Length: 104
Length: 177
Image (cartoon, rainbow over all chains, first blue to last red; front, side, top):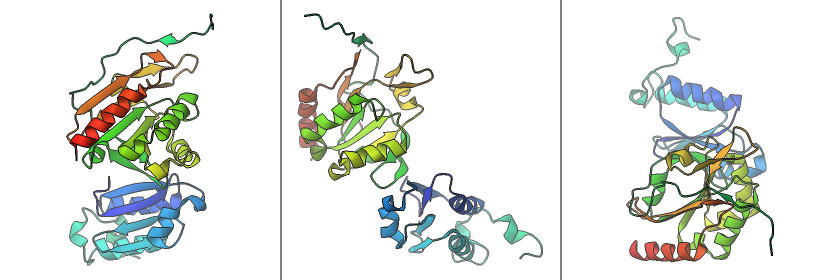
């Protein structure tokens, strides 16, 4: 409710958004969800925040970073909140695929 | 002259009244651009608030109520939010249709009608099995979360006492400077 560091702009039932949600949950990070509508023309707020009209987009007040596209967001979350990341201590968990033996 | 129509009588209900603390709730709050879970208290903490319960978007009372509130420029005087059982999508469309965003009006979407149940103002809809919605109701809330004015409809349809509401808005916006 506008009181967490991370804001996620998302679309209901959007698999790319759910991918980001899963990562946020794996790290145990709190976030605020802002739902937008399917029509791109109704996503001015996303355009203002990120420069694009696609979702997901996250705004992270801890780092001051706004980032779009689920693959980029997951990479960002791993780099920031994963092992060795600057805000690793903020995470209350780690994705299984980062801790599995052998890794990718 | 007998117009031969029936206004449904609901009778009084034990709803939160003036002088009481407004019951807290969190629901998706819909603006022109997005919706986000929002606590009622986070709205009145910033200034006095008008909370309007009404029929679902699409039914004429919702349209009439907001038309009158807009014509009286009440949303220009006090932060105004509606609440109905309509979906966030329907509320967003209503905001666009009526240019309600120009007056900063937002809507809580409560399709399950549980806020109305908590306020003791829910009513079943005859002929729409499984659907209930709030009675029409207006609450003026000060910055401490106290209800300074409450009106709840006792018939269907019922429309707010706009003059009394306007006076209550004037009072609360003067005392909470």
